[in-house]
Image 1 (cartoon, protein in one colour):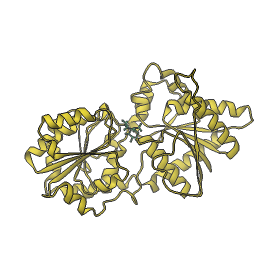
Image 2 (cartoon, rainbow, N blue to C red):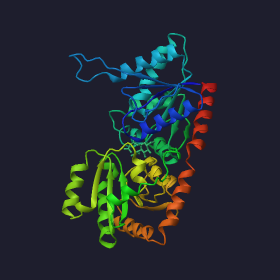
Image 3 (cartoon, rainbow, N blue to C red):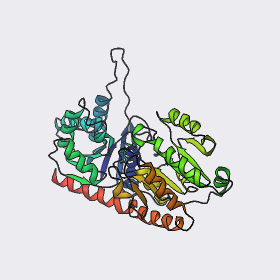
Image 4 (cartoon, rainbow, N blue to C red):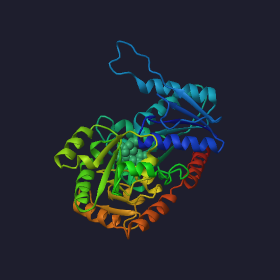
Length: 374
Ligand code: GMT
């Protein structure tokens, strides 16, 4: 098939899923056209089936806000027309699904029918989409899509609860490339970070409020009192300065390393022992899946779709959002020398259930169905 993929190309779960999906489809022989405002972060290889179309937005003194959605819709029209695409797959409802709707209507005037699949990733529904300023457009563009997928059962349920959706939503979970995300030998990293064989706890995110990074620090502060340990914080974002202050106030700054945004996150995951994800909301938790693939058990909240990934007592533990005591108790249990190897093995086994080779065919048969039905 010839597939157009539209996504947020910078770091962030939805962009990662869209890019990795496109790469995997291209390897399977599909022709994949990325339509984005900059080269997707993980589109860093050459494949004869991958094409990239940049959306550039003209600047004009009259525009206080650049009309990105219009530039995107025009680009979609041209790519569909001239590359003769079979399907457009847009990731994230706002503004990609509404721009796709506009492109679809314009293409009709050329006698071209293009089926549109929209994938909901979470924040487009749980945080941004339900805002009154976007709600009518989100509802409309989901209902006008030819196919809609969500990354977890929980996200599907909350989409139906929060919007008047008339479409069937197909659940296709996040996936992982186990060739890339696997435990690697990185003993020199381990020596540099934990020279006295301390246990290494890790959190990766975009440091937004919804991630509750203060809970990561609170859990670590308690664990650190009881066992020699270090905390790695990977990523960056608005909460970072406050978290640094909190570490100084709790007198644990020497045990906490802020590593910033890392491309090869699997390298630090390879030396870590426990992943902490205490999110307020989380539609799936791709970062936790990446950790599990590298044999790291997960202590997480039970928000959103996390229970569909992290199996309580198997790949780690689930606690109610904000229940620090429970998370500390679980973390200490998992980190016991007699328990850790079992949890590591089970985390990896659970991650293997989301291997890309299992999930990719679900997208391919869904595309086929939508093309035939629309
Ligand atoms: O987690 C983030 O803040 C990034 C966010 C996004 O919108 O890109 O990730 C969302 O999509 C990922 C891929 O489907 C999911 O794994 C994340 O759970 C989801 N984040 C939230 O729901 C908060």
